[in-house]
Image (cartoon, rainbow, N blue to C red; front, top):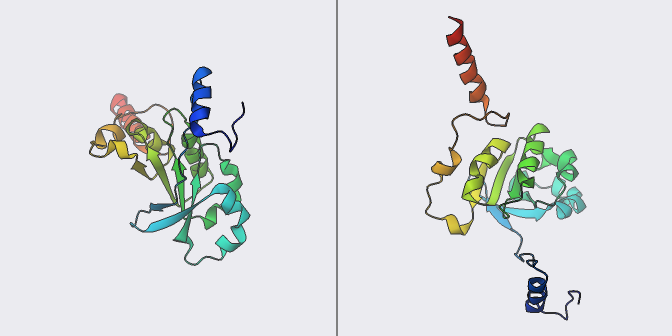
Length: 181
């Protein structure tokens, strides 16, 4: 029986359980986030941003609205208007979905200079978010009180290239100089 307005959520969940499939989590979209200056910024989805780009272009100051990017959103749609966006919030709510890292990497590769916030983050994602170019993050409520530094500063050396590993090149330069003498 397909899901419709007639079927309740509990019916959908019971159908899913019989198929060994978990019903998708239904959660409200993020509507605002605090930027690096601790100002509340209204968030709009990628579709809304594209559909109303003309009105958002006229906003002064530009930091009144940011774009919330879900893992399934296509960031290529934002590429031509990145200079108009002061803040992009990447949603990391699903622990095993790595598309947010790719989205952050692409935004940095395209020269996006605004703030990239990882929202709904899990502790174990912090270092990877930072390495992919996320400039700040907001943890899920369940992690309040945890020591974040243990998770964000986990590796002293990383072998893969990333947005934040300029120190890796410097360290290898120093090691090479020491071996030359």
